[in-house]
Image 1 (cartoon, rainbow, N blue to C red):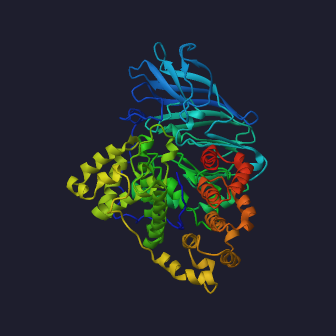
Image 2 (cartoon, rainbow, N blue to C red):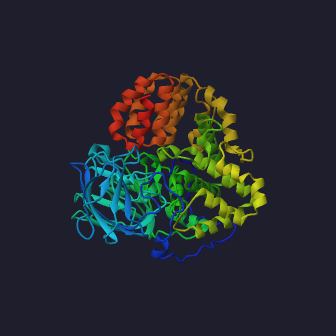
Image 3 (tube, rainbow, N blue to C red):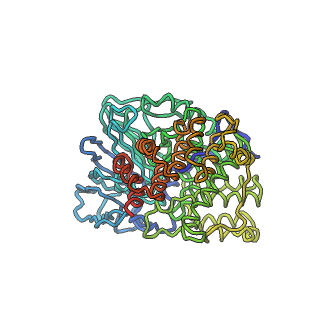
Length: 621
């Protein structure tokens, strides 16, 4: 999952970002081999306990009703009993109508809901076949599903639906074992309004079915959080034989232009980490309400429209989500306590591509911005706060609470530290072997540590304070530091930009340099200086959402009420939490909570539940 955007242009296939070729095994494991893999730890965020019967295949038959805002139908779960007397499943706000297996199952139980975990479904397995068919309906308030009205889409003509499963929201639309440590294959039949196309994280159609009926198949085993669905007025445009983009008709051309380097990125990724294991890699551009930059649903990345800048300056989002096809989707954190194994590895890979395509200094720019984000997180949590650990203890907490910059940026720094210690060539070989060894498996932090210690000399790892990195709070004193010539030029030019004497044109700097400048002057520049800068550089009307967001934040921090209408307009057209939270937080911090509440009440219904939950906590304090 992508929580920040970095600049680079991917203009050609880059196959020399590593010093040696791919050594990955192209032969995929059989389905039986994949499905036999089991987690060795308990997941406190799932009722599907690892010692019980395990789901191995899911078959969905669902109909989407945009009037009642429900999905209804059945989920057939094929499972291995493993000598268990009960099949435990996760659910949240589902209405279970009946369960069938060798006849009607009468003695199943649905427990009372637990906060953010939902309800446990218990199905005794005695006398059952190796599958159960559950007839059910979702709630109109299902946390994973956002039903958008036509006016919330680009085309303004048809409604739209999409799901967001990470971390534990899939249980709100499918009764399933909703743990990252449990993998299964799936197939689905979806019935939707005939004007709309349905897509899933599976083999997808490229044309509208005039009857509104679609069939999907995902042959690779995945965890529940990666099962995804979208329904809308969509068109498809291919990049090449194995990648393309879906978007609403009015956006498809700009989306195809923005992400045209996708085939080059896939080849570059394979050169670095080995073969792409998912056949196709397609992108779906969602309406603005989507709460994240991107979501790495296998075969179909969900992407925010906020990256459609018109100049490919923010296409790095795709590099991040593509990298998840290895770190996260291929090798998955066993529990949400180990989230850094998904995201820290992905950030490292993303920045390696940046370095290969745009040069070392560009990669360093991204690393510096990431380090600043990490420093800010440490200020929020406290330098030794429990939240600053890589391996977290989220028992009793919503796993979303662990999805912070610590997982992304401290995890990234840990890998950079290893690279500096052992050399890039040796670390690349280690990472290739790691992805090969744990392909279609899950892994804990402890298991990763054991694998690391088998590969490198233990005494050398101890000198590098590996255990401190993995298990202790704070940042070890051997954390890498970065310097950038590009940022040095921004610092040098800053006084001239503020007094109006600078000769720099907007096109002279990359977008990350402008972001760095706008962050530097936050709380330093006066309202008049910001106004003059806007006249010259048109930050307030920038096609780059990152620029717009930091520009508005600078003004909010000066209590510049003249831009409140612009803030309202901006917060009404984006749903991405990365942009929502800083602006609402700035309004609250500067004594403008009444303005924040007014704007939020106006736009709350257009935000996904993930964003709503974060903002509800902020504004109800």
